[in-house]
Image 1 (cartoon, rainbow, N blue to C red):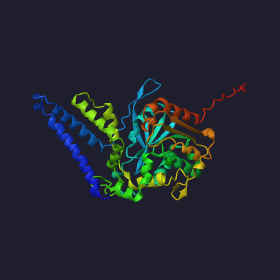
Image 2: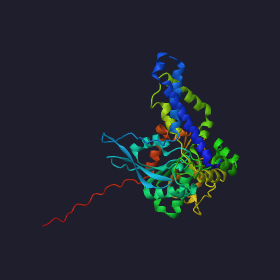
Image 3: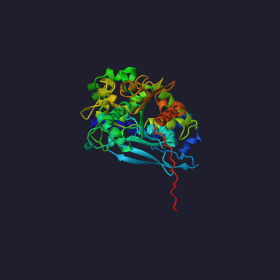
Length: 426
């Protein structure tokens, strides 16, 4: 499957379905059809509208579209984004809240590179902005990166995180969501040896596969069941002629989306069937629950082949992080060297992607860290998405994370009053 023709064939299928949806919508919207009311026409129009939107969203990077942030001064402050570091494969993005005093909490949110854009954490960002000076890793779509930019695997990803942490300074609190949790832990350990003064103050790992074998899931079973040769043959393709990254070997976003949907096909099928019914009955809205979720869920990005394959081989198959044998740029990273950074793990009891036990394994690896700087939380009834963006995050987990950040921030020093000058002039 490692051919441009295969990549372009998938894009052709996507483009054709988008065109079919647009054609059905246009045809069924002719005013003449209103003369003869026919449910079939309404359903055709609804199917066309939902189909066109669905396949069009697959190649669009969503906007951040962050609403204004309320502040103690009674005003709503506009939010803009600013790239602090710009690199070929990802940027360090800063959310600038205009006109607001900078909060004491400086937070780096490490977004996953697992098929979706960093905007998947939009609701997480919105929930954190009132209480933190927030930064995020904004990874780029591999199809848009020229081959001349070189490779990007999990070691490069880790070194990107090292540079981002160095840029932000030692007063930073890092929150890693899902896939980057093991690599963020490794980046922190790397800094502990190479540049201790650049380490963050705290590290919160949410639903990440630190030790995938601690509690196997369908994801980990798949990683063990297939060989690397099979993965390379079945999942890797070359970017087609339509994009700047033409010729780059990638794990295509469209192929990833097919895997995402197949895991819960019946749920997605019912969701789209019900949405078509709502559109046909004029009960749907532009920003209803279905569109808000799927506009983000369907927006997928390509991963570089080397990143995907090295993640499967080194994190899932070989368990290099779990066995504390991860190597970056020829140097073995010892997680036990972390001695000052407070570490907290967050898991959900119903997480079917990174099951309970996989993330909390990080605490056992931090052998140089006192128990007073270790913490964990298991959220009852929460699934994977819920522990960083759902109701469980908003109501329970976010307050706990903020408390953990505050507990590991420098305490404000009391102001000392200068003694009065008793030597008055004669």
